[in-house]
Image 1 (cartoon, one colour):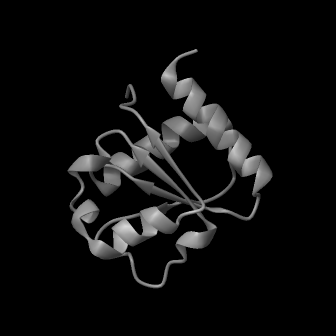
Image 2 (cartoon, one colour):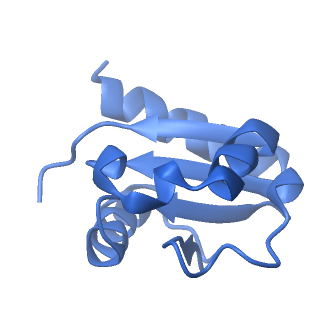
Length: 103
């Protein structure tokens, strides 16, 4: 099974186990995150509207009820150097790294 498919199955399992969980997506840019979600959602058919994280959208979020998807080139996003984001990663209910996707 391809790595991406394993992560998709993991995502589906978490969404089934925790239907009220929020989905947060981080990618290299907000636009890339939206494209990644479109690709992922074509596979999982989820009706949830995710939060696309960028550096100016961290206030007021609760990581304890979140599933953070680290998609594609997420490591290039400036948000990862933000101490608040690091705290969110440590306290998220689930974090799933999803490798580089084919566009």
